[in-house]
Amino acid sequence: MQNILSGFLGCCFKYFNKEMGLSGKMVRDVEIKSDGDVFHEIFRYRPHHTSTMSPGNIQNVDLHEGDWGTVGSVIFWNYTHDGKEKTAKEVIEAIDEEKKLVRFKVVEGDLLQLYKTFIFTVHVDTKGENNLVTWTLEYEKLNGDVEDPTTLMDFCIVVTKDIETHHLK
Image (cartoon, rainbow, N blue to C red):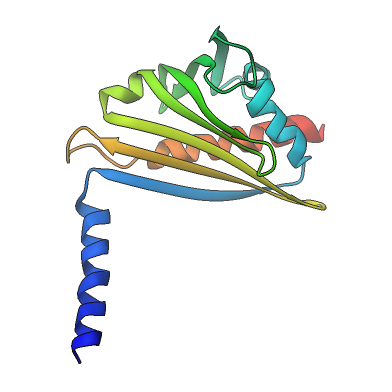
């Protein structure tokens, strides 16, 4: 009985912390029909091309420091989210070629008005014709009144689909 009770309390405690805490993590997968390697290359080496593939969402992407596709490079994004013009300055925190993963940490911009920290990770699994793009958003809210970034995750999925549509033409 004690093992069952402590297992139950441990489960509830984790759930309580996840739901009530200021830190959070969202993960969503989307299957794409376009080439997964090309998709990874876009976010690693050519994020500035996303503005031509998803112009309604991303207006401009500039390199501020470093070189495209290298850890430590600083990228500045102009985008439209929830009908509003926004900006984000991000540092490429990690690149894993084997896993086809790129992680961006937001260091300036609109998101930091709501979140103490915000990290985007895009990861591509390529298995034959089935390619899966996984977006992970890790964040810490400034306070309990800040909503989880659900619409921002939706934004990432829409941009993914726009990139896929562009490459299937």
